[in-house]
Structures are given as C-alpha cells and as structure tokens.
Image (cartoon, rainbow, N blue to C red; front, top):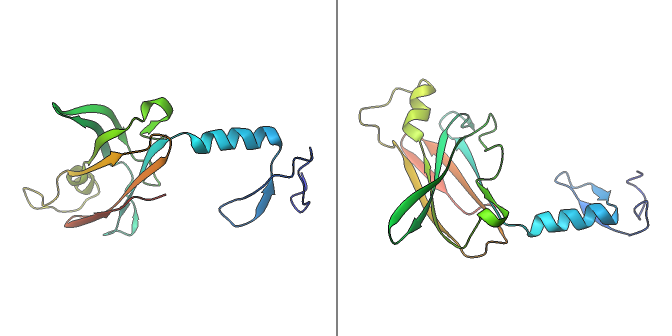
Length: 156
C-alpha cells in the first residue's frame, strides 16, 4: 500500500494518524473494525518505578470491584517488562459502570527488585480507588511509584 497516496487502495478515502505522526491509509473494512475497537471500553494500567527510572516489571496487581458489601476480587495479574499488563484489566462487556480498586503490590515488587525496605514498608500495597462512569470509554490508570511515594492520574 502506498502511504503517500491521498486515498486508500479501495477508494474509501480514509486516513489515520499513527503514534509517530505519520499518516496511513486504511481500507473501509479495517476502518470499521478500528472504530468498533475504539468505541469498546477498556481498563488498562502502566507502572513506572521512578526510583529506578524504568518500568516496574513483575509487579503483582489485583483488581477489585467495590459495592455496598465491600470489595470483590475480579482479576490478579503481573506487569510485563514494559510495566504494563499483557491485556486490559477489563474490556468490552466485562467493564461496567461502577467503583473499582486496583491494588498494586509495591512492597513485594521493591523487595524482589533488591531494594532494602524497613519493616513494615512505608508502602506495602498501594490501593487506587476510582469510578467508571462510561463503560464505552478507555480508562487508563497509571502509577508512578517509589518506596516512599506514588502518583496517579487518569491517563489516555
């Protein structure tokens, strides 16, 4: 496919911009599929170890749903080498309007990374509680972590 052409090969005219800023052309079938995926809600996270200046690989993450009866575990996973999960924590029909908590197992991560922590550790588990108001949207909950502090925000 010639990406310098103003139209896609089947003449649908669709163009998209990738993360690098380059323009690429899509066939109408691929465009419809990508629009459907973009409309599907999902919950993702990314953990960065700010004390080491790198992704927090192999950090255990536990996802809970919160209701009047407390919290109920939905998923348990571990971050990959990039500090992300290999798949969304929730996606599509799994993601529902409601309150959630992601519990990041920071103390275990730092100990396994060779960081000497006091006992008890200042941050053993970092719980982030948040709400999902639109189940058709992407919610990204990144965590910037060190042994003595953390920051989070709603990412994209």
